Image (tube, rainbow, N blue to C red):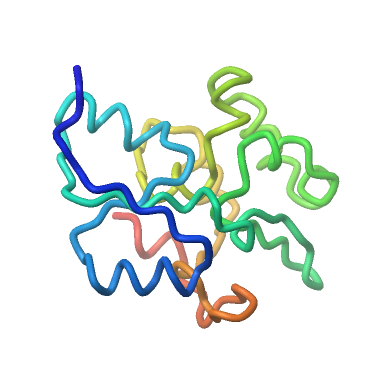
Length: 158
């Protein structure tokens, strides 16, 4: 099936994405597309605006900050699976990522998209809850994407 018509937006920075979302509060965010696009094709959702985050490299990272592993929203499943930092410090997360879909899905799908979609049958939610992980709203600081605040995942998924 073909999705309903929509306007496509492709910001190149977190600041630009946040400005678009302020102007277009009904917009849907597109990360890797493996959750949103099938729903659009089936017309389960029909957004009038889609904001594609794919060009925002500042959201595509995995790094260790002290005892904490920080994973950007656009880190692909393959990045999580193959990251030395993740494999060394939270191997369950790397193992979870390695079992998601097939190679094509792991190379394009993102942890942020999967967690935003919050499908209870998906691979990440159980792992994220078991790890008692925290998350930050999109963008955090507009300069360096560090979080303004951390939200406990357990209390936000009910």
